[in-house]
Amino acid sequence: PTPGGGSVAALCLAHAHSLATMVARLTVASDKWSDGHAIASTVIEQSDVAIRDSLALADRDADAFDSVMTAYRMPKDEAARQSRSDAIRKATIGAARVPLETLISASELIHLLLDLSLACNRNALTDLASSAELAHTAARMAEMNVRVNTDYLEGEDVDEIEHRANEAMGRCNVALDDVRASFRSRLGW
Image (cartoon, rainbow, N blue to C red; front, side, top):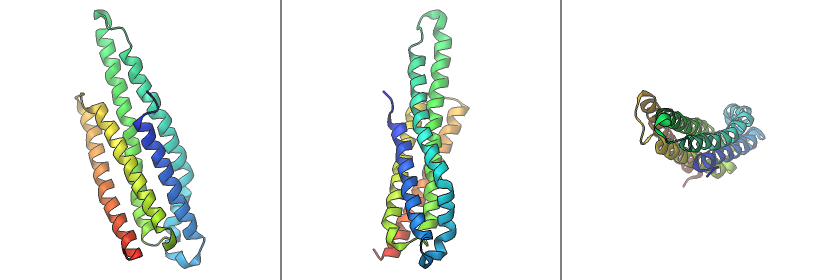
């Protein structure tokens, strides 16, 4: 069953980072876009680690789900019931935390893209918009994977995970709208 949707979300995020890096490099390559050099340099500086982290999140998501499946395969007899239940809960919380990281990382990227959209190389604005759309898609997929894992659980840890997911997705939605407005304005669309 792995890799699944959470891994794919992280892979989408890696691609979004790659597109952002391309836009940033095209921006710093020309003095014409000097107003965007600082933010573009920030994107470039963060890109290698961000791409590597996204790929690691894809692997971690698959591992987390495998842990859930392992917990469900534990003995179901009366003597093992509580330890099996505890293992399932712990693994399921772990399977929610990994896509939450993907969601938060996607939100951070979209906010960087908003800043970059204001002064990047105009010829790469649709690539920047594609990066933002892809990051948002990664966030949405990650959010679904958080929710599917927290749906049937209760507790303060679950409440905290869901709260953080709601906040991050809300920030993503607002930032994506702002990126769309920015690039459309600059292109006169």
